[in-house]
Length: 324
Image (cartoon, rainbow, N blue to C red; front, side, top):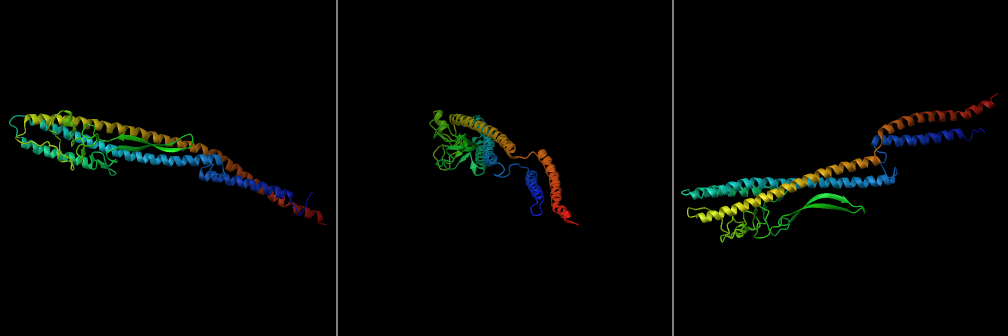
């Protein structure tokens, strides 16, 4: 039945055009944003998963930044200790040279003073981002004389609980022993070259140190005079050797820690790439498919417009029936 009041053909054509318009708009959004799931209405499950994964990726990026700072801190400490080892080796060589008969020990002491100042300069300058792992200024501060905790990984378990795993490096000094990590300590026995523990290990009655800590001025320092005996030189040389070996051990620990941080940083970078790829599989649009759909919907839209135009002309055809 034909009617001039209700044009069923036009209504059907309009509904089709509206449907094609919605599909075309959605496809255009996919093409413009590159996402097939850009909001929760597109796919609530995928949107929820991808949003959580993006949040985790940001946290992982923060961990990578923290690892970068930690790596620079450790590398600075390693470089400082490596240079201090070279200076300490020269210091030991000067003590050995002082054993020669007829040598002017005061002249050698002048050289030792310069080497001591160089050791202080190295320790003081080995600081990064406010952290110095070579010079302990306050042995009572747990941030210095304690366990170093460096961010290592961001973890989300199967239950959805999150945590930050840390890389731990214990730099707690054992007072008056060889188990010390800082090169210098204002408290004296918490640093390697300010520590009388090495003299105690060798059983010497004189607790020689290279120099005293600022707040621990009680031990005899390695100072040469013309009256310095060979026995005293032997003690100083033996203690210096133990200090040097401890410096080598700590430098090796710094190197191992630096390697672990490097491995963890590489893993975090790989993990972040994997997360980004996983998010892409869930929400990214297939641009080849979307391009084809866009062309198809544009063609359908043109046809629907033509169909609506034809349907709208139907009432005019009815008028011809009433013409004389």
